[in-house]
Image (cartoon, rainbow, N blue to C red):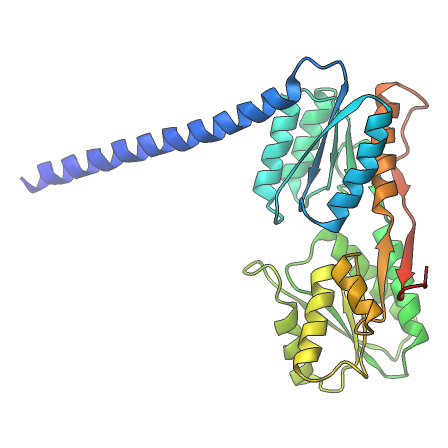
Length: 323
């Protein structure tokens, strides 16, 4: 009797699991097919898909403006896909959909890991050119990377730091989550440049994958260990904001020098109000324009091969009127 009961319960659970799996797969496949249909169409326009890690970010909006302007002038149709918070699994699905839709080109913020490299290879094998924008995957078969040279970014900021450093001073480099390849390139470049200043002591703090942004907590821990620390660098925008939050909560900030990478309205406001000394900014509208023009050039078979890298200008923003 007991064995029969266990068998019946197990069978019911298995049937429930199979129905649930079938339903979830059907919903995903329906959504995927809808997006493929939306892009495929019968339009004679050149069809481009732009895939971005954060749809509402200032980077994405500026990139979209640049791409959109060139697309309008050249009879090109652009679909913008992405997530509201960086989600690699979803972004890879968008790559699959773009490839299945047989679009004419893909402009994408590169992702870390071999899975992204595989998707680019699949697109290339199907004759779809891929341009990486803002972040790169140099080991992939992408046609061109368009964006800042992140190593040069690190050199530029380190040179600025050295103008304001005292002998024996300590500096804290902060990433509020597990570092992406872009942040690690910046970090290594800063370290290399600062190594010329042998008396500098560098403290590096990095979050993990459990939370999106742990910058404030990390900076508080550093200040507990090194209460005299006065020089901080956020390796991304969220880290820059987290540093300021930690200092403000301690009633500090008037004697500290804070720097950060990336360009957001919140970071600019912190620079304008004196909480941050300077941030590194990039013309992302121009980045978008150059990306889609390279796709067009590839499709027209004009002036090939494409350059391996097209680096955009990066400058230090030190407040209104500084540019």
